[in-house]
Length: 334
Image 1 (tube, one colour):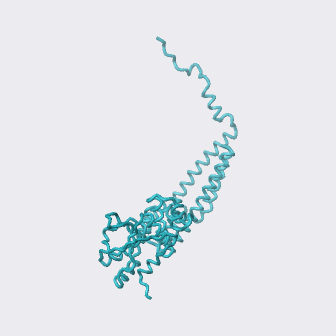
Image 2 (cartoon, rainbow, N blue to C red):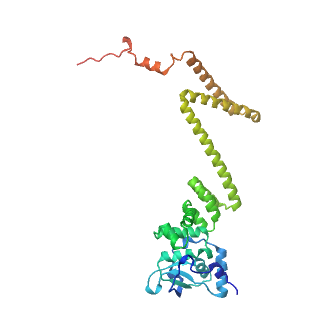
Image 3 (tube, one colour):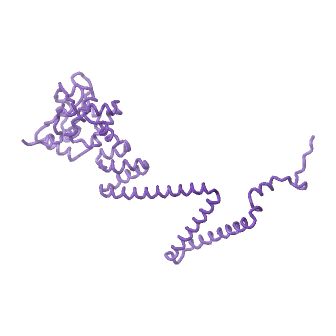
């Protein structure tokens, strides 16, 4: 027996998770009456849609769309599954479709579809987006979702975590096929947790000049290494600051002088590669030289007579009564 592309895309429908929908109706309906509420939870796949269109054109629509609601009662009919088949039908210029209407509430219909997701062509992010609709849009708890779709709560939690750190801009890029699910979960999500600004900048760059998954993986490895180096450097600086605070002002001053020695040593090593020296380097040296001479003079002065130049003595002198000749003239009292 030949299996059509539509049947392969659909997979088998059973009662996985213990959910069985009964009293369903198969109707020939206009596409315009279907509410496409979950369109944003499905990834755009032009190749899959093209394959479905060829299959439907050759064999007709074999697998019905799945919707929740009863159009005969005048109520709304929400399309739960079959978004790619809708796209394929529209590509063929058709405005009607075979729809299996489930007489249950919307949450039950979505849960039934998720219960059978082991045999369906759902990506992990698509499952996560449907779970978000159930928990945030329809108000179900994670435990209830897990129980009713035949999964454990850790599976629900893992799926939701896939998209919890993803900006909406990244989800839109995944849906449009501009960003792979792998890149979204393994690169954009951890990048957004570290820096939302960096993730948004990367998404803009990928929109202007897409790169391969391998190139993106290599870039993120370099980024993570650089970020780790910066973090370690910051931790060392914080450690030095803590040590300086513990050692008091004298310890901080000594650490600064040692840092100056390190900088001078580094410049000294670079000089052979800079010859002939530019005017800017020479000018910078003489500025440093003047500063060091002034610092040396202050250090000699404070070291020779620290009491005379101490801030406490200067403050005490300022607080002493001024000589009579220096006193301001008293105003005449009326």
